[in-house]
Amino acid sequence: MDYQTLLVEREGPILWIRLNRPAVLNAYTSELGAELARAFAEADADDAVRVVVLGHTGRVFCAGADVSAGAGAFDTENGEGAKNFGGGDGARGDSNFIQAMMNCRKPSLVAFNGSAAGVGLTLTLPCDIRVAAENAKFGCVFTRRGLVPEAGSAWFLPQLVGLSTALKWCLTGALVPADEALDAGLVSEVVPAGEAETRARELALEIAANCSPVALALTRRMLWRFSTQSGPEGALSVDAALNIALGAKADVHEGVAAFLEKRAPDFPLRVSADMPDTPWWPQGS
View 1 (cartoon, rainbow, N blue to C red):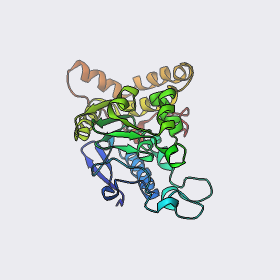
View 2 (cartoon, rainbow, N blue to C red):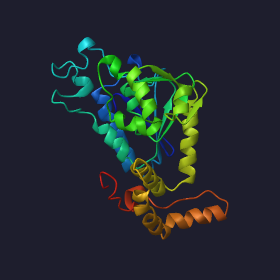
View 3 (cartoon, helix red, strand yellow):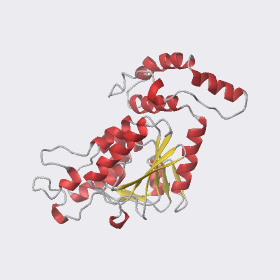
View 4 (cartoon, rainbow, N blue to C red):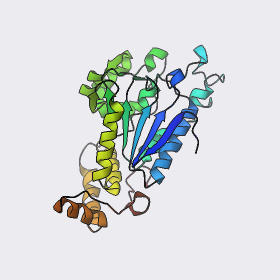
């Protein structure tokens, strides 16, 4: 399917999803949010896609919401903010992209070859691994615009960087350099300028070549679900049963055989057909 705000293309086992509005610094609109939801849903349904990498065209990852409407750019009650937020009933018409990203059973990486601010940063928080170029900067600028953190970031950001750092970043609204983002845990690696996509590709190919798609899908769900709980009881309630069920499946046989034979694995199970039930996942899917 055609995309108007994204550049979506397959590269072997990787699905690249690039924000593609470089003339306006990839500024966010509701159309972009809707297309992100569609792209991640398509990645989830396609067994040939093993890893998703979210990137961008142009020099900036995303400058935030499109404010081309001027001072009323966020005013949904009077219609000027419709392209950013949707209707004036207090609901985000495009926020389902966050749920689509969370429910996607494929690991997702982000390559920041440029800076990200506002929703340009928060739309990446449901992804699993973030790689930043050394010249990238990040900004939770909502309070400086009279707004509050959106896209679920009041939950996501403290999970990634801790409450103290999330408070500092959100309450000051200041831009954060890549090295500070690395120290805080927002990004997992900082690489030389222009090399974020190269490093993200390396990581994506390593994952695709060595890991079971079903085990990956289950593992990312377990970590997102249980790491926020106050104790290990939730994880303990499912991990043994899952490993017992998986131990009888072909992927475990293949993984062990490949290890013993010192060769690359060829996992036969597919996410579309062979996922165990995960009723503990919020969507139960």
